[in-house]
Length: 130
Image (cartoon, rainbow, N blue to C red; front, side):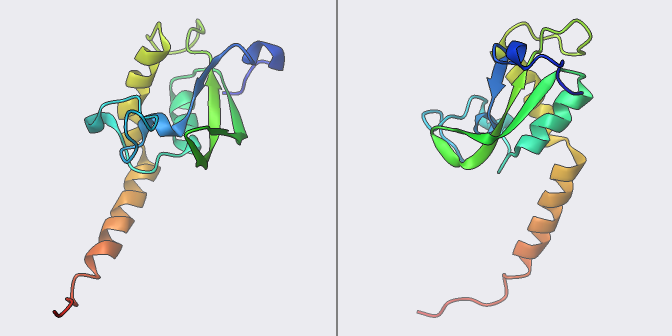
């Protein structure tokens, strides 16, 4: 779902960064969810897919970055209080905790983790001698 035509109104929407859901990030490094809900290497596309699923208006800003993790570009501005949205969250924190399990359940994320697991298991043959 795309944002309304007025980009001025989007400047007051809540900002969501992928680092909020990163399992490798610490709390002081920017992670906002607990470790069981966090995922490895979250992307802006994952958050975008969840926002589309919940019918939450959003604006993707690919050229922006989180100051504590500027190597992971992109952020999303969301308006989760929209009357047509399927989200029941009333605060930004509640919305983050609502979408965190949905990010882990995405098909694209599960396929990428399965291929990464099979690639890492093939390297287990050779051991280092002392």
